[in-house]
Image (tube, rainbow over all chains, first blue to last red; front, side, top):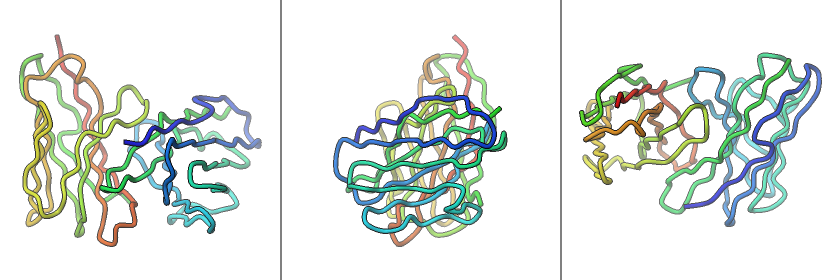
Length: 113
Length: 112
């Protein structure tokens, strides 16, 4: 299984600012995924990030709010822009392996004040 | 939108007892995966079951899948206090896009 790391593990940010979350995988993968988990809720897919192409966003998520970069096959970033308290969540990245099992990073716990 | 529904939402049992969690979904799937999450941390992958499989085992875990009923169950046998966590099912639809739709989760408490 892939080993995934995320930075930062947690942060407290002021409203109106932006935070960039990094996701690093120990092997090359085609697709990386970003999920959001709001307090006490389940996970919701934000977008799919493929290397060399624009990220594909799910309904309710837009590029201006959640810009994503995918510069190579082992790395991706998610930026949460112009934050408000409603953005307080855990943000997780994930990758598939060849047998379609999907593995998650440890998450970034974001609190917006 | 969330496709999966899980029940119960919360389950409290004594150590040594078995815990069963159920997951239902609405559309055709390619596979279904179960995850564990401890105290809002990252998700731990437990098991994947494909649409053409009916049952899988991994240690104390047993997963069943009934595609005719669009439902799956996770059984944890001989539970331990360390099994206390939230458990989520997640489905992947046809086309192997990798996109997962998560259920609402079951919070399991195992009392020592």
